[in-house]
Image (cartoon, rainbow over all chains, first blue to last red):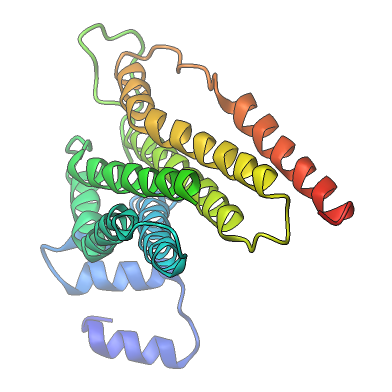
Length: 142
Length: 120
């Protein structure tokens, strides 16, 4: 159980893939990077990460989907697709930032530092507002 | 484990990280709700004209997208307000608009059901 790779493969081979086991192993194996350790039993950071992934995926998908619909609908100006494209871009950026955000949260939790990051939330908010603006324009102009 | 919030800190105390993260997830859920309502509105507006009466279709789409705009607009201010309340161990702001979303979506669903059943 001293080497992360060896231990990981050995235990995974036996079918034991519990998150706790993996987190403990990684925590011990990589000194100084305790970010994979569980912080509490409620899996706070993991649930938050999934919520971010869900929202960013919805943002990207609805941006692309609605933008595609707007472009294919006759009688709707091409410009209506612009806010949808912006929303999709915000979703893609947020998805790309998932890992960075998660590690920042984990570090803050384990280091006892305050958690209040607003930049990503603002990006998500602007993306959603953009998608809503596009939808309003589409619904009214259709 | 995080330290639990101490009551009544006037200058504000760093809240329990679990509450901060729960607040963040609630904010994200409001955004997802808004996106889902928008998607519903766009889908309703994009439906082919012979499925629903055109003005009815537009009305339903506008209601859905308006609800979506409302949800999106209030999400960020509400997130900040809840965080402020957490810092000051104050009562959380009430979910004042929650009934509106419930009844609004129910009304749209009912109208759509009537339209489907009457074949218009």
